[in-house]
Every structure is written in structure tokens, then in C-alpha cells.
Length: 99
Image (cartoon, rainbow, N blue to C red; front, side, top):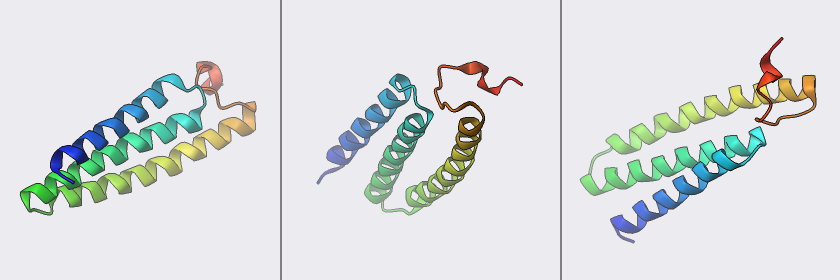
């Protein structure tokens, strides 16, 4: 595969993730869309790292994975606590976080 194939795949994955975030009402599916977008960025970083022959992009992709793991832990904890209190995880109800 060439550089263009990897970048097109990265763009397609990012687009699918962005559409998921913008169209889904379930918070868990929105988180999955964000994770898909982060992974598509990782693919682009690793692709450019390989093309240029350095490890900089791969190190940055590793940091993105660490931040994504922390984001998932915190995000899912918030979603679970909201679900326990309100029995819904819809992102259309902004009043969920009001006291």
C-alpha cells in the first residue's frame, strides 16, 4: 500500500467518526466516534512517521493512545453515574448535569 492509501483510509475513518459524533444521541456511541477519530489521526501520524523515517509520529501516536485511554475511563465513569441517576444517557438532555 502506498502513502495515499493510508491517508485515504485515515480520512474515511475520521469522517465516519465525525458523522457518528454528530448524528448519534447516545453518549456511548458518541464516545466510540471520538475514539475512531483519534485512531484515524494515529494512522496518519504513523504513516507520516514511516514516510519520513523517524519515530516522532509513532511516539505522538502513543501519547494520543494514552490520552484516549484516560478519556475513555473518565468519560465512561461520568456516563455510568448519569445513567444511575437518570436512567438515560442521551446527549440531547443538557439539563442532566444541573443539580
